[in-house]
Image (cartoon, rainbow, N blue to C red; front, side, top):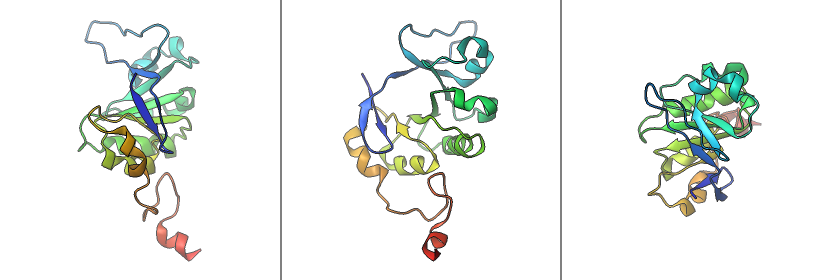
Length: 168
């Protein structure tokens, strides 16, 4: 079973299966007895069926808009954001919007092409769990999450820039 790393650096089993978007004309296939992350727009479309289920979370692709969940975000136990390639930074913006504008307070996970050198930046944007790319060593991730002791800018993890924190 794959593993994920939490924001505190601990490693745990990944209990969530990312369900791929079905091809056109096919239906969503959610495995029985398995926590599943389904495409966010399909969760919204099937809201009556999925609402209140603790075994269903959603995932966003980098081009998706988090506004589709607006007032429903905290009904979800896990929201994952896919990074299709390491150079695609739209997932950082999705995370900030979910945390800051929509007030999401449950687990926010980075999936896809997640590399070690991105972890601290993802953490500052509000992610609190990370499914690393399979060829990366998860045992090195804890060090990468806390490589810098302070961030200069305000972010999800602190609402004041460093110069204001130093002044007080």
